[in-house]
Length: 486
Image 1 (cartoon, helix red, strand yellow):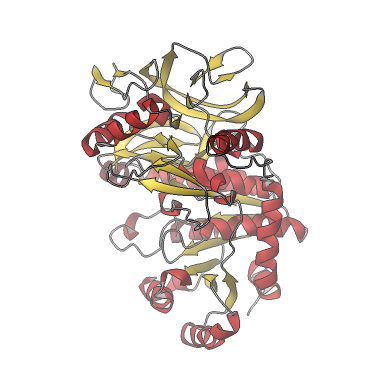
Image 2: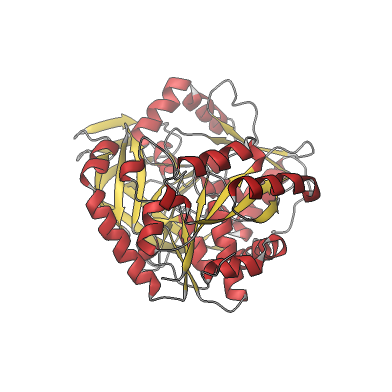
């Protein structure tokens, strides 16, 4: 198999970013790349055209590669759901919820078989497979039965590029430590190093580059400067950060739920220069926001208990009653309702569970064993919307719907438009809607309304590919692809 695997010295080292940029760059160089990640542990997911669920990063990488995303690009997706358990999604379809220990003990052979099948299927879609690893390849407590890094590189028989984030500090120790802990045959697969998120003049790192190459015997293929302002989604909760601007006139409080799902729904606000985003985890830090967003959750009952234990529920309810703008997305929509019922134990694991929600909207949610995974289009306030739904619950609403679809109505919207809830993920990536939602706040504050920003994702792929191309030693990288001596 011709390809390359991007591994990292840690989680959030930039593997997804580099793999996505590489998918677009390879197209520009005349190749036909196909993305692949053997196993993803994330509640940020992507819905394929046929209603299957894969890791969000691989969906975006497929777009960057000019392909329709397919389940074979991420054969295993583990969605953490609390108490050390995860929902297992195999080739896009939910199988069961299992503890991490049980999965590691019972699923190893099945995982290997799924990865082999996935590799075979993606190899038929293009001429180079761009594989993304997970976490670090030297988690020693997991290494004997790991399937996501060197085991996959071995199955695919591809070279490995090791990525490290210099912005974290400890770059040299992280690279050398990772290489030292690899077995000899694994280390032999590492053919290049990428230093990611460098700040300042890269000429100041020349001595560091020379030292790394001399000490490790492995070439540094790129020192990638930090790239602000790109609109590529983060893959997991480690990518969730506050967005602070001294001059921002709008303050948005986003509730940082313990089991947050698809936190990437909030990322478009990073490109609105008059907006601050604060991730709030306590009543004390709630402050006086202009709007509140309650994101999705993988465990609605557990996160509802969190809101009540912290007193955040009272702050949110009081804010809504005072005329504040509150929007709930997917699980956040469920939490805003009056009751949540789990007759089969789908969310809680205990049959017959019932809880009172925050009561902000007249809605009742019943959890079902069958999962809804679908792309969705509709109209809200005259604005066309597109996104996707991933949820177990069915919510009955009394009142005006948030969105009208072809054959059904969805969600809830108050008559003044300030309180809303919807199952639609990706909502704020709709530029016209995001502008309309923010302009409602701007008008209330006496601010000038703004035209919609254009978050052209295809343009984003070109921007990050150009960034990688500018700093990557392409002849050496191509030699690695071709298996030539360096």
